[in-house]
Length: 211
Image (tube, rainbow, N blue to C red; front, side):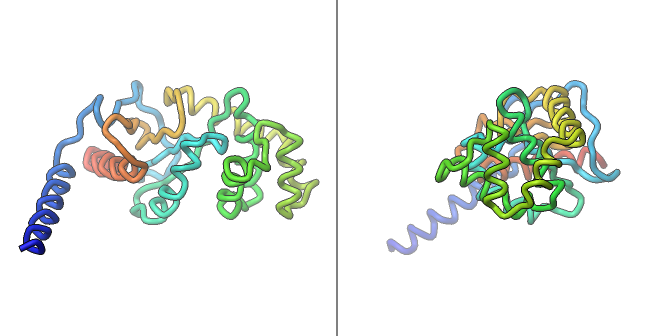
């Protein structure tokens, strides 16, 4: 009898989940609309997903274990882009992101950056000198890293990140924006997995609206 009750409980929970997933998304509850919509930076026909984040943000740090496997499973018609928050004290960490990206090691060292800031606290990501010392300890060519980090190209990328944050009306991180239109809201979520599940639903909505 206990087994039967357990099975009914599981079935009921699954039915509840299916109903929740089938419920229509509501503007102001699940997402906000950007006005005006912003141009995207992915191939025509693709759906852009931007994650505005900062290495120094503890919420971004806790989101990281969930978002990495989620990104790998995104459909082929979705283009995902990390955008570092670059204002004020966050500018050095944005420069770090773009420098590692140019050196093609950001994916490899991303977890190390977060762990060094929030775990053992061996990296002060608001300080240019500390960042360059950290990079050398990680085995990166110190001169090459420094030259790229201080370059005009990196400064231009940081300025572009600032412009994107402004045009997408970003007030905090992490914030996910789908297809230049839909800002994913956190009103109804209780976990980072919930946030990504809601983002999946909004991606589906964006895809349907494209058609």
